Length: 373
Image (tube, rainbow, N blue to C red):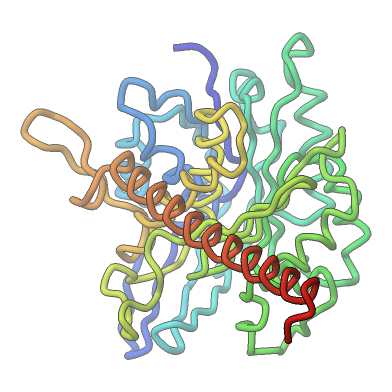
């Protein structure tokens, strides 16, 4: 099969979910790296799934059912076992149906490039969720450790919320020079740019197209990527995401929006991990589209759609012929075609509006030229 193509360095966390009514669901597979890995995995057949690499830390209390959930994915998997440490555990507390707070219950253990087998280090695309300091260090270490005969890989970086503040913007700028894609969510982008305070609750203003473009422009003023041709992808909740390069900016809609006909969309059960899954799907899209970031975002949106449909990760099952089924719904490829069609229809509507504006402007110009009031 060859070396893995895709690799995530981010954590595997065993979550407890505490709902607003006080009930608790224990030992749920979670963590940014896990959701990103699932976001990749839905696009690969079982015969190809070993091209995805994931390395995770586990303590002496790591649940067997969690390990089995990872093993069933049939990916390239490396377990780093600690006999003297507890596993990484967290708790997601829902204050309301839409407001969630995460906290670690045990000290986190970060995966670093030196933890990876040599075959993982030769992947084409790497994903990590970390601070700007760690992002720069990860890139440096991967380039140092990987086979020097290989071309440089693509790096996709998700800044962590804890590091998203205007005090860290300079280290963020330095990290952006080393990665190919930076993908904060809208709140993290606003915080890094000094547009939002830590205790501000109204984030809707950062979800408008104008504000998303404004924030993307501020990132693009700086160098992204070693050659300055990198991208910023601002994940924007139910609005989808803004994909921006120096040449082009485009809103890619979410597959499922939070609301449907003014009511809560029944398909959206829990958005935990949706952004991480988006990045995993985005990485696959980069491979399948010859590194077209706009096309890649469609793959990301579809991966996120499978993540929000239940608590925890997407569910893998098999039909009577042994074919894989995700969440007992449409296949990823079917959803991709549906989303492509929606984007094309939206583009047609935008072009119609622009054409009408040009025609109206031309009519006004003719009237003015002929002296008609």
